[in-house]
Length: 223
Ligand SMILES: C[S@@+](CC[C@H](N)C(=O)[O-])C[C@H]1O[C@@H](n2cnc3c(N)ncnc32)[C@H](O)[C@@H]1O
Image 1 (tube, helix red, strand yellow):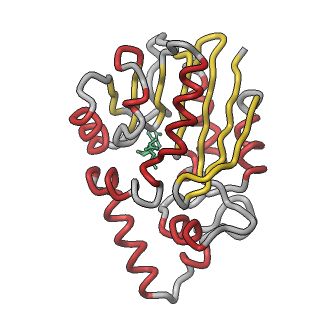
Image 2 (image 1 turned 180 degrees about the horizontal axis):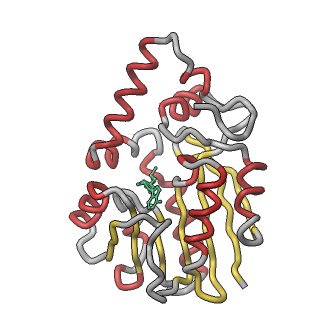
């Protein structure tokens, strides 16, 4: 599937038809993603257990004191343990991922629902985390999801977006991981900032590596 950015996607050469081995690996990766336990544990390898990402999320959390946290698109709850269970809600539409998250983080609260249609209960959050969700979504859908997630922010509030980023000169490890990722919208840093800043002003950005995977972090402030 072509990216919306118009530019050639990092790892796109790996998605090109014609390479049976790569096609086989991609199908395998898609099947792994459907199995919560395999998805949860295998992803940790190229990401070096997300050490770099966790340190950054934790730093944002700590700077806010004791924020009420919405983990929008929380997946298997990989990052839940960074947050106070009593002040955390993880939301994801994948029932298997939510079941896995509940089994492994028994004190945290989770909801299996589509963020796009999640009714507003009036609950507000000081920190909304959108981590690794938007690179699966085209621009319009990503805008809508960001908007829905940001609408749950308290005033003032903080939105933290972290996404896979396409680099001008990616390492071969990054090209492989991005080529196998079933997110078809890995944008470059400029496009990420353009998309996110439509919702809220960005106060800080950073491109960093977690394992072999390059990420772009965007911190936004809601007035
Ligand atoms: C690559 S996973 C990232 C999960 C988690 N944030 C992490 O970093 O481990 C993307 C997640 O976004 C979820 N997702 C995508 N669209 C969603 C929506 N509209 N509502 C709720 N969850 C959604 C998917 O089900 C998936 O679990």
